[in-house]
Length: 123
Image (cartoon, rainbow, N blue to C red; front, top):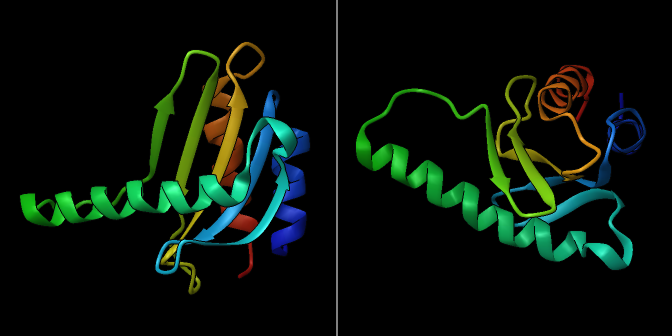
């Protein structure tokens, strides 16, 4: 599945999805975005969440943790922001970002669907 198809699927299959992006956390640039609109500027979210990912990776290195980050969850009053770091098939250095309406989303199902999309994604 290509980037555009993966992001469209994320926003249509996952209940409560507001927007999704594939982000290169080396540069902070979004390689693709779907949704967001007036409610959420996905370009700004991509850049800001790149800082979150870099900080967490750096902290894990400083702590000597030899584990991998699966995802990072940011919980707001009305939204969930889910960051899933990609692994395998040349995908390291990228993450999927998904913003969800907290009132309509099932967080466990969103994580499950995002993992499935990651496994089918070709970068």
